[in-house]
Every structure is written in structure tokens, then in C-alpha cells.
Length: 598
Image (cartoon, rainbow, N blue to C red; front, side):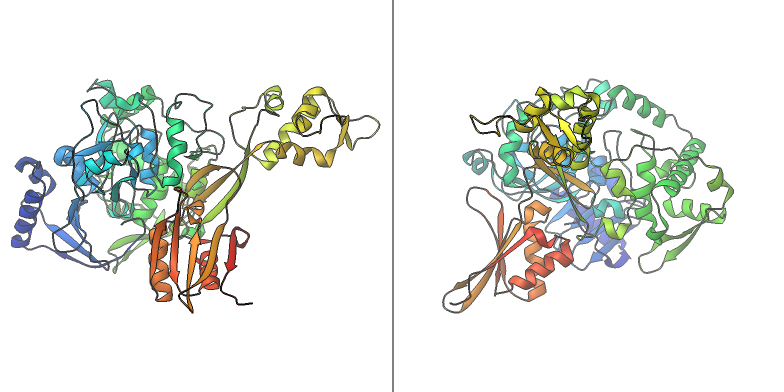
């Protein structure tokens, strides 16, 4: 619901009677919410602001604080708590426990919760009805990360073998509702940029068993479940690679931060004085101005500057809460920096938000600051992009990568490279030429030829030469790289909105097909869009508005993804829309018109 930025049509304060009505509605809706917890979430004497959106959603926020509840239909029938409210009262809702912290990457990526990603408690599977409001938690962390509606009853879920969609997520940590909060914060050190892990302080206290040692699965579309269940049996094997897995970098996936380091950082955060928090804020801002924020990103809203640039520059494992500073609010802090002459800001009267419009890079504080150099990773590179790009569906990047196979793993081991990593074509080619140089295999009489020793010959040709045929003794330099890469296992990385996903195999193209039905009526079918991280339901709704026609979304046989059906012969229009709006390259779009008469 809050996957994309939506501007509020209006903001207004609730009257005293409306505040009391909201409190009664919330108390009747959530029976587990005590009077004390309700006062903590909706203080009786504090002003409450309601924001009205074009999709009829109402968001109730504490004035000068965070959004606490949102009403989907605008009538009070479907009112849900935000993660900020759940962090104040974690037990106000029943919650599903994920099988591990890594599964949270999919929830934070906007995916619904699937049954294979849920940890079944020792006392048995919980009972619930369809349409109930449930939260989502990570093992070893009491703070919920998402909230949504159950899609079926527990009895139906058991009859279905605990497969399929369990929870339709309506709101999650780091979505646009969370980012819109001026005083946005995280409840503990387990909440990171793209994943939520155990709370180090909670684990250190020994509060209950940590079920995260169990097998890990994931949430996402049905296509991924079998591969992820297979991966769950060997999640502790550092060499295991799942069919589809969210990764922090191209080369390796760190399953968790060092707990001891996180504990130390948590203790440090708890002991920081107001002056130290102020200094940390300035340090993170200067680091962001030097490293991630570019001139092309300006002007930039204050909330986006905070979420996409300042927070990622804080020390690892350390939470950054502006409420613990002397400024208390993001706007006041930025205005203080503007008064010092380091930046220029203005207030957007329509959005009621402060905007950074310029940076004085000749300011003494900026000039004297020495930025820390960080190792470039895929998520970090996306952090430096502008907000418009980060939030745009056009931001699509496809990278072909390769994994060493049984044929050429000896080459990687010989030069000290990891056999479990993924390599780009240039990196893989570099590996084989390093081996050639190491073993001195360049032919002395002809520098363009490579002499094949037994290891290199097996890596390039074992199993590829017909029986009875002789193996070659040398190969031309220009053929070494391509032949070596052809013997590796192909994979590909899809990046949209800063979320890298690695899949096995080559890229499967989108298929757009037009058929004739019932005389002269035509329908257009689109399948394979999940490969490019396009949500079928959202895609169908967009096409319905774009072409003023009816659309439907159905699951393909054999759980091979989803098919979007559009009324009318709009095959060329759909292909053009995918290229222009979603950035899908034309070479990955296959069109087939079955309506042409011979």
C-alpha cells in the first residue's frame, strides 16, 4: 500500500471529540491494547493530525511525532497500527515469526508473507480467521517489522499444506509511510537498512529461546518457494546459494553482523550525551555530503536526505535518533546548519517539509572534514542516486554473473579465489588469465596462443569433446575468456529501486501475446514480468487505467508465475509501456500476435 510515494491531499488537526472517537475505535478494534499502552500511543492531551490521501487512506499522526494508525477505507472499518505504534505496544497484535532474519529482506522489499517463511511454534500452528490483522516479527527481536491481513483461515492453510500467501502486507518498516515520519527512528540495533536481525540487547539478556537457529526460508512469489525450501535445509553452509536470494553485495552475503560488535555499539548508543548525538549527526551529514549526495540530487526533501543519505552514513550497528539531540526535529537541525552557512534550505509549503536546495562546499566545516572511504557495494551505489531515481519504476539494471562449476573450480582455487562467489564476465576472464600467467602458459614462439596444461584443458574442454577425438594442446588468447565463461553456471542480478536479486540461469524474457476470442474480440496476455521485479497486481491496475480497459491477474499452471490479461489487442502499446515506464530492455521482450489472419 505504501510501496510508492503518495502525496497527501490535506492535513488537519482532530477536534477533541474526534480524538476521543479515534481512541474508542482503536480500543474496540484491538482488545489486547491496555489503557496504559493506548495512552502511550495516543496521548489524551496531545494534538493528533489526520492526513487524507487520494486513495482514501487516512493516516493519524502525533503532532511533531510519528504516524500511529492508518485507515484503509477512510471509514474506521479497516484501521491498522503503524510499526511506530507496534514498537510502543508489540503485544497489541498477534504476530507471525519468520524462520530467520534473512527472510525479512523480502518483506522489506515489498513482498507479501508466504507460509514457507513462517516458523511453526512448538505448541503448534496458531489459529486464525481470514482477514485478521497480524504482525510480523524476526526471531530474537520483539519489535514487529510489518502488519497486514491474513489471506485464509488456519484450517484452510493446513489443508493447503502451508503453502501460498499467508499475510497480505499493508505496511512495513522502511516503506514510504515510515519514511514520511519526520522523527523516524528504529527501535533497536537489529533494524538495518535492508534487513532486520536479532536485537543484540535482547539476545544478551537471554530472554527466551532464539528460534532463528531453525531453517530459513523466504517470502516472495510462488515461483521461489521450492528453491527456498531446499535452501532451508542447509542455511548454515557458507557455500550454499539459493535460486533467488537478496544479496548485500555481488560477491558475498553476510548472514548477520557480529553480535559482540553490535552489543558494544548498542551500549555506546545508550550512553551518548546530547552533545555527542549532535556531533554524530553533523559527522553523518558531512559524510553524506562528501560521498553519496551529488549536485544532481538537489533539491532534495529533508526526509529523503535523512533516510537515503544521513542514516546510511552512521557507524555500523549504531542507531541515530534525532530526538535525542538538542534539535529534537529534523527541520530544526537542518535550519541550524543553514544558519551556519554550510547548506541552504527552504520550506515546501505544499508538502509542509523542509527541502535542501544547495550545499556550500567551500564552508570550513565541509573543507576540513575527511570522509571515510567505504568498499563499494551494490546497495551503497544505489544509495547515492537521486530520490526520483530510487523511487522510479524505470530504474532497472540487469547484470549477467557466473558461478564456478565443477569443470573450472580448480582454476579458481589455484589463484586463491572463492569458488562459491559470483563473478562478472570480466572478473571471470581475469581469473583464467591470472592462472595462465601464474603457470607461464603463453607459448614462447607465438604470444597469441596459450598452451593447455591438464588443469586448464579440463576446465575448458572436459566433457565437451566427443569420444575418440583428441583434446587440443593449445588455444588462441581471444577464445580463452569466452570458452572459460561458457563452462561456468550462468546467473543474473536484477536491480530495481536498490534491491539486488540474484537468480540462477539466463534471463527469461517477458512474453506478450495477443489472441482472438469469441469472434472478433481480442485479449493480450503478459507473462514473465516477475523476472524484472514487477508486481503483477500493480501492473494490471496501471494498464487498466492506461488503456481504459478491464484487466485480470491469474496464476500460471505449475506455479510458474502470473499472467496479466488485458482486454483488447494492445500488444505494441504494452511493449512500449514496459520499455518506457519499467525500463525493460527491448531484447528481453518477446511479442507474438496470433490474431493476424492468413
